[in-house]
Length: 435
Image (cartoon, rainbow, N blue to C red; front, side):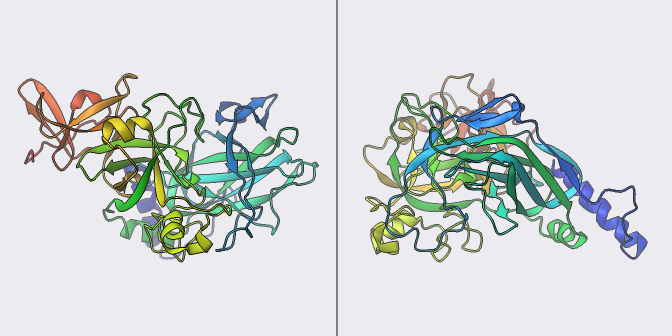
């Protein structure tokens, strides 16, 4: 993917330089790419697709407080009333490969929205390094909202500005409603606008390595065995996943598109995918700078809103839905991460690396459904176990080495896993120093 996008950028820039001026597109050259993803092929979580339409399934949907109708709540949150938890369903649609880079995608829906229901679209793009940008909710382009619209099928459109040009985009349909008032979407139409030469040149020049964002936050145990996460995963005993308080970094079910490394004060670490939304808030991507953060942009980067509410009485001590915050949690941990990987006995401060935010090499752990692989302090059988890498989690592979007949991968300082646990690591350089 890095090679494909880099080539597209270079060709576009080189073409303009060769011509001396930017020539207008010919009549046969489309200025935009428009497509309608096949709803029946989508990965559904709380959504049923039949007879060509996607409909919220309240019985299978994840319960979550409904976002504000405008998609732009004020810093103080909604008055003081607790927002009712409503069924929320997701339909992740197939990615689309484009002939030319884009940095803006428009969306339009044909839908039936009973009063109180909503239908919106999130979009993300594949970065040059191969990982995805975060999901970005479409901003209404007509001044209206996609809530409680008339049942004539017309839903106001939206637009997403991507953080960098990309040749692969993906959309996600988000439906909310109550039993008896389920939204139904018949068509999603997406239009990708060509990235300007200046934005492509800027992306090419700014292609330097990015460090992974890392912050210390308070962690709580999620529990809820037998329940369903926001991406449709049924929570098992001693499960290995985490929840963050923003849908922007929610991985589709059984994927590792967004993974974290969590380290406890005892030195143990866990690598796990983000499969749920919470705790407390649903629009608090606190790891992002204020200019990008969906809400609470006045807070310092890396400070969860719940932490500020609990410790500093920010927002009157309430979360975005008016609930009194009872702890400063910025991450929820599945029981297997909390107990088995980290060895925690109680809620604790932890250090979290948000792995998708950097340009490090990420590869997926695959244990054949066995839950997790042990992370060892040295590349040798019998070395001290210092953590766990969950099945289907992303890990940052640094280098490879062989100890006798066993092949190992280094995934952090003094952190090793067997090479067989990461089959898609591919060809990587040999470790110069196994420390």
